[in-house]
Length: 219
Image (tube, rainbow, N blue to C red; front, top):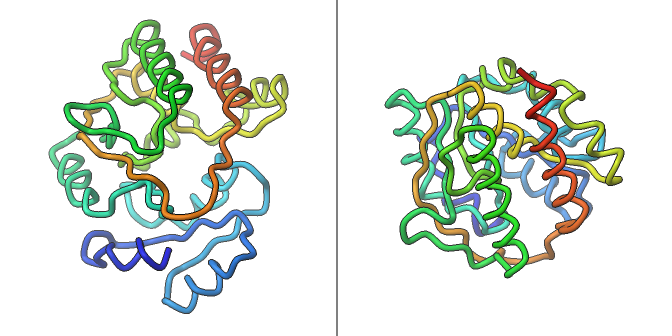
């Protein structure tokens, strides 16, 4: 946070929310001391954090951004400029053109390729990176694509004993509804510090189940 957040210029956005999962390492205190609005989620799981914080989102464009070093702050103006061209969603793709991920392993790279190509094949997407968190999208998509509802998530979460985020489902439903989506190349640097809380096999199985289920259960 101390390295990444000063690189975000205030003129790039109207509002900046620090969404915290209940950290105990001083992040909350530091962010508040810098004048950031901090929301600490009550229910575990990224999608629940998103849902809880939505009433506090003032603008009509949302950018989800990871401050651990994986997301490059200097790409924020490019994401916004593409949205202003009329796109509903713009993804900072780790696999477009010469972009690369320094945080990938062989397993995660293969998983991203499999999930992205499955979404393209069965849901009509044109993605190179359907899973990445770093993206900009119109807030109305959260409502028109039913991302706040439990029914798109809860069966997969119960079957595989995990909690999901909404990026893969957002990609699926945006493709199904033929939303105007584009990508920009965006490197994913290695995280600066800490350890990934990636549940590779449980998340992988749950997301793949979710992607297939959408063929039958959401119109």
